[in-house]
Image (cartoon, rainbow, N blue to C red; front, side):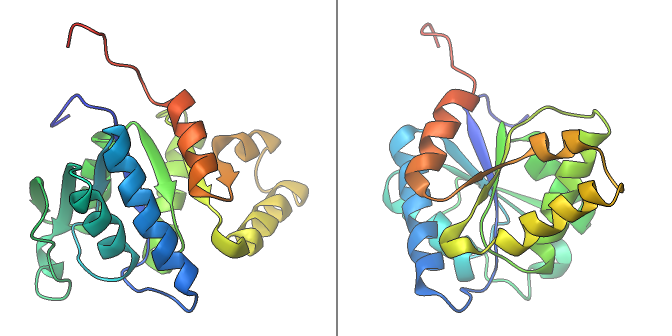
Length: 191
């Protein structure tokens, strides 16, 4: 791990999507992370929801670890407010570095990349490779179709019911903050 402070990995879209609430809540999430002293770990971009989270965290005095693969440097504008930047060779390395430097994972609305990131950490959990908490921030019901699909995976026998316990759905930044407050490790007072 690059640092010992409690850290939250945020997976989310490099676009803003069709609902202004997505960017607003992403900003509220970044501000909350900064206020709580929880380090942001994210994809290093300055676009879409990724940028909204990072800008709000930076504006609140928060620290951020950005991780970006070399092939995206020309496609995604790198955020200049990042405390630490790691450039990886591949997308898979990016996901691994983000995951290894986080104590919890939060997924906001996003596209195929966000789903890929989410399902990789859920698969790792299913295989017993970690027990980190994973949260879906369900802004205006965005993740409802996904949770219905996961329910179908269980009902149709393609995964065990235990899979439903590998993630939690929260509907607001306030609910997420309370859940993270319980889930994140506490630093000893001497540090």
